Amino acid sequence: MTERAVTVIGAGLAGCEAAWQLAGRGIHVDLIEMKPLKKTAAHTSDNFSELVCSNSLRSNELTNAAGLLKEEMRLLGSLIMESADLNSVAAGGALAVDRNAFAEYITSKINTHGNINVITKEADSIPQGNVIIATGPLSSEAITEAVSRICPVDDLHFYDAVAPIVSFDSIDLNSAFFASRYNKGTADYINCPLSMEEYEEFVSELIIAKEAEIHGFDDGAVFEGCMPVEVMARRGRDTLRYGPLKPVGLTDPHTGKEPYAVVQLRKDNRDGTLYNMVGFQTHLTWGEQKRVFSMIPALANAEFVRYGVMHRNTFINSPELLDRYYRLRSDSRIAFAGQITGVEGYIESAASGLLAGIEMSADINSLPHVDFPQETAIGALSLYVSSGSVGPFQPMNINFGIVSPLGYKVKGKRNKNAEISARSLHIIKELKTKEVFSSENNS
Image (cartoon, rainbow, N blue to C red; front, side):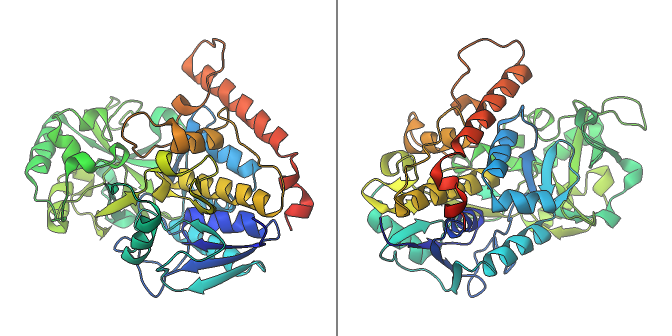
């Protein structure tokens, strides 16, 4: 690769991060985005990097793999993390953001960067030259057809679900309490307790509630991390109590005891006027959502400003198609980034764009690749996506299971994870001495 220009298709988390990394290294970027001319069923805003599901970027702690990945990205100059940290809202040990402010900040940064030219149109073909395809799990039919011509593999897909959002003023705080699990953070969640009788009645109605019609829907095609609550309820009456409604680590100040079950609500914007139902992804009809979710005492009169919806996610068979730089093995000028590669989650998507952008810039600037190793979260993720899957390829969140083990024993899981994180961050800091990170290549 010699031409100092790249076309990035898609201005989601991965596309914006890839464009930012390339542009910061003196490379001209044509960023193609179809919004606002055309939106998918899950998008409502004209902004780039719109969060269509939860507003949480998950744990911010270094004993958690998601927390490690975020810290690595901060060290590597991530635009997504810069915006997330500036637009965060209280969420205990997690990093949650004001979704509108988060996207607006990224949109402004991209639009005002001198090396990025935003082109508003629907991409219907793969252009010549260096390309990063970051069209996301909701890629339009036109670009999906173009991708299928260079990726002759079986169509892989799963379904993703979005949780409802309620207005703060409509929550009955007499039937709820503020707290974070295990008292982490500053009591950032609204907790809605249910007694055994209330829980049993809620589950019974949830199991029989009417679902919205989705063509070709199959519960088996749903990614486990976004399993609809009604699907979980059908797996067993206590499944929700050991999942999103688990009461562990919470004490109801009204009773002094641990509730039988708890529905948690998390801030969805900085002003705290909106809260989302944690873990309540669903594809029930809107009427059934109102009826069944209003059975939760604290939400008896809740105003649902957004109901949950279900949408299809599409991804390619990356282990057969991509190398560790997210490049197409059959044509190295083309790279992919984001959930279309099979990484799962906001941060993972952005991390793939960051790595793809850095490594493609190394090619263009005739510099050695960084080759993030499996001892790092960002490297482990790319190596899993490109070669680490055993059996049929499925989407993957970052986790310590795909990171290289320490090679020595450490007592206690948290201590072991902390050691893995410390090792990874040391490696990242050493890698930053490579020429691709020098000031000459970041201007």
